[in-house]
Amino acid sequence: IRKIGVLTSGGDSPGMNAAIRSVVRTCAFHNIECLGIYRGYQGMIEGDFKELGPRSVNNIINKGGTILKSARSKDFMTVEGRKKAHENLVKENVDALVVIGGDGSFTGAEVFNNEYGFPVMGIPGTIDNDIFGTSYTLGYDTALNTVVEAIDKIRDTASSHNRLFFVEVMGRDAGHIALNTGIGAGAEEILIPEEDLGLERLLDSLKRSKESGKSSSIVVVAEGDKIGKNVFELKDYVEENLPEYDVRVSVLGHMQRGGSPSCFDRVLASRLGVKAVESILEGKSNFMVGLICDKVALTPLEQAIKGSLSIDTELLRVSDIMTT
Ligand code: ATP
Image (cartoon, rainbow, N blue to C red):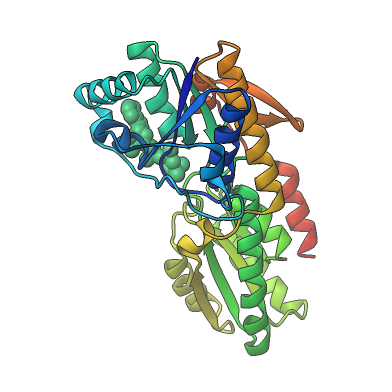
């Protein structure tokens, strides 16, 4: 191995820059070249490349987003697109690829590896924490802190006006952000895609909360909550059934994906980047690097993509007890 390519793909997340920096500097440490690939797989197809030396990643460890930009590439879903991408990598003498992204990006890497036997290594970068084979994905910890900070501010206005707020957080298929920020920000109820709380229970819980003397409440709702209603429909439903509540909605949106990465995410990115490059140098391919029991470990990409994930039910219980 003399040259490794690195790209960021899919939704961006805080810590991707720290991971790029780690990959670039680990390559330099081992005297191999590193090629930055812009705009994910689309840039690989279009030959949008830049040589990255250890000094080209100065002052990015603290920055959100990704200096390499990210993209979703329809062309890479086609045989012709991947052929062009492969030709470009061969032309640039790239011997292996590090893909920083989510499960879709890993699927692309796996398909590419199957077609061309091209060595690939994945680093999980997504705020959703929905990838098998790592306790934490890059950006998740930062997103939790961003969301808790935002909900704390909403709580100030909620309590001043005796209001109920439905706060929508990211998570179409995974409730990790909602569950953890809900507990961290002291939410009354938490609605997640994995568990159907039921509308009746939501109403009961809000009724009890009012009766117990609470004057304001926060309900954290994941985008893909199992109840099947979005935050605005929930607001209407609660206002119809509990007229004593003055309800507001706050959708946090893309702010959850931005911001300077937390120390945890920076350290995680640095560790995963070192492991990704050194695993490639040991001849490994088609793995994702992740954190298991606080140790950096490899999981086959196929498992990382397909492995089933479950929510920690202990957290649901803790949340219940905390709303007493
Ligand atoms: P996020 O978790 O933020 O959505 P992701 O990595 O899952 O991130 P996707 O948009 O699902 O994001 O995938 C990123 C890119 O990976 C796609 O735009 C496409 O180029 C590539 N990709 C995904 N699935 C495949 C596939 N089956 N074959 C080839 N390429 C794929």
